[in-house]
Length: 503
Ligand SMILES: *Cc1c(COP(=O)(O)O)cnc(C)c1O
Image (tube, rainbow, N blue to C red; front, side, top):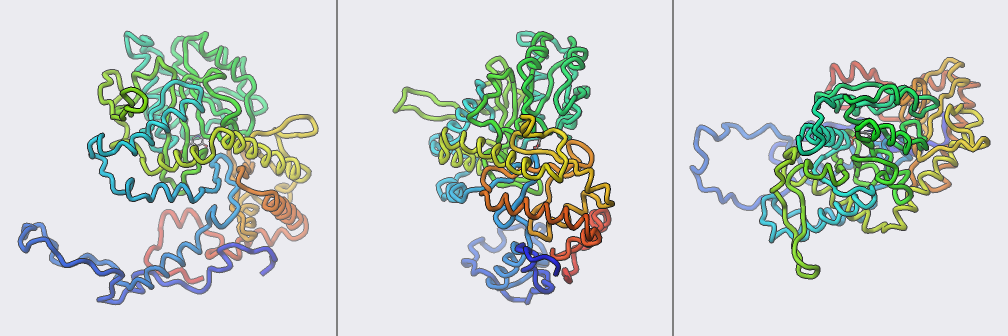
């Protein structure tokens, strides 16, 4: 034990934890089921299993302990500071969970008649209108179920528009431009949609306007841009970028993963965006991590609305006597991109968060996200070099910042060493090596108070001291997590899933 600040779940990891299969005692049950009311012989003999499935048999208390132990070993935003850049790992207010657990919602069947599901449809309709208003755009589809899925659906919409003789009518526009700092999902979505991707160079983290001018032509469908961008900077030339695209007959697509910095402050539609996606699991506090769940609604200008996925939630009738319905009659739609209505449970949490915050609260959220990031960057910039940030020169960041700690790395430690050492101090490592090599990208989010930010600064400075005096400490980190330094490649290629964790 070398640290005094180990407050993580790691220190409560405790002794070896048996697998649930090892806890199994034949005949044990966690719940009593009602008597079987399926008549004998109802299942054709050929379809009935000869043996019961090989499930663990445990009592309720053993079951609760199993999951409680697992939960205690988890590194989570509810237990730990989680400054994972570009992921917006903010606190998920528990009111969201209360709303999503309401029996009136959980008991709905997705094929229920519209008349029986008016409340759920209203939630979707409100969410649609609110997200359109926040974007400064005209119509929203809630169907995509992740940011990357939103990109895919949006690129399909753009393709449908240019292929439509009554629409864009320029089917040759099949190239999508993306800055070299783009998130990996951007080029991946383009490839999945059959678009050619061309990389636009950046200067000082911003799009190189001259290069962009030289690249747009009558085969350009769109530029996909993230703003604030992946270097944590708001690209102030965005209206000029929009003009370059529009003058060439192409569209501007916004990757809205960084909306947390600008909600209620600036609207993509106002700075020239034609189509964008949200990541509700980032900006609007619906829980995420490890790949799901999520929602990636897309917002578009009016001329793109006919191509949005079906169905669309609509409202009819006079105010006071109105009702909600699912409009299937959209002949130019790209079709469905998801079963039923998207991730309803996630969208319901998004609705709850927006309703609870209100317009002032949402603006406050973004302002504090930006304030917190600038506070950290300003206080860390003495020892951790920041390529894009210098508050003394008026170069501020948005809701996250990038550090390339060259001086510290020159002492023979790696970014992984720093990241693993943070785990010993109970802090989730920031994003690494993205958007530039050898960087850490830190995003504190608005929900952290000053005491937590100060503790992070203290820990980062302590790690910098350790690198200068005792770098071997970092090579052995993490020492206080349930597992030490993993061979991640071997863990992925030859996972051992049947032996208990023995540390
Ligand atoms: C998170 C992220 C995405 C992908 O979003 P998912 O919801 O994880 O699919 C795309 N672009 C950027 C900039 C991101 O940070």
